[in-house]
Image (cartoon, rainbow, N blue to C red; front, side, top):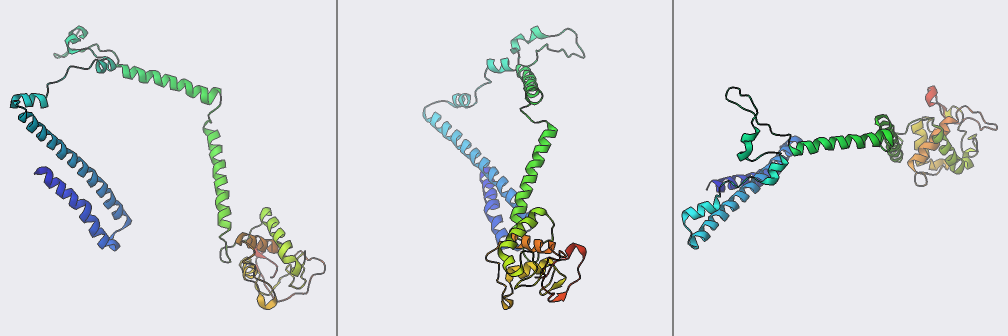
Length: 297
C-alpha cells in the first residue's frame, strides 16, 4: 500500500504538473520551465526506483509461495532468503592487503593506550598500484612534453589556440560580410578590401565612370559633389538599387553584399585624386569629416 501511494504521487507529478504548465505557459519564465524539467526527470527516476522495489517485493512474495508449495517450512524459507554472512573473499582480502579475522592477533603492535591497540596492516595493494601508476604517468609526461616534445607546453598551446581563434574569427567575419547592407556598411581602409573593390569597379563601373572614376557617361566620383549622397551608406545604397532614371542599373542581383561594400569603399578612397580629364561637378557639394570624405555616385 505504501508503494502504491508513492507510485500514485509520482504519476501525478509527472503528468499533471506539465499539463498545468502548458495551459498557463505565458506565466512561466525560462528558469521555471528548466526547474519543472529537472523536477520531471527526478520524479521519473524516483518512479523507476519505486517500480523496481515493487517488482522486487513481488518476486520475494512469489518465491515464498513457490517454496511453500514445494513443502519447505517457514524456517527453511527464511534461511534461504536471508543467508548468513558469507566468508570473506580471498580476492577482496588480497586487494586490501588484509588478513583474515582469525590471524589479526598476530598483527597486534606493542603498546596500548586507553585499552586500544593497533594492527600492523600493510599498505593496501590498490593504493600501491595507484602510487606506482602515478610514477609511470610522471615518466610519460616528462618524455612527452620535455624530452621528445610531442606534446605542447602551456605557452605553445596558448599560441596554437590563439591561431585557431583568429582563424575562427576570420571565418565568422567572412560570413558576416555577406550580411552587410546600406544600414550596416562601414568605412574601411583595408588594402585587401580596396583591392577587391577596385577589381569590381574596373569590371562594372569603369565603362560609365571611367577607369580613374573621372566620369564618362556617369558623374565624376573623385570630387566633393554628389547627386545621391557621398556617405558610405549612400554610395552602397546607390550601387545596390541603382538610379534607373539616370541609366544606372541595379547591381543587387549581380553583386554580393560584400562586393558592393568593397566597391563603395574603393570609391571613397578615390576622393581628391583629381584624375586628368575629370568631368565637371554635378549635384550638391557635401562636406564630410576627413574619415568619411568620398566621391559622388
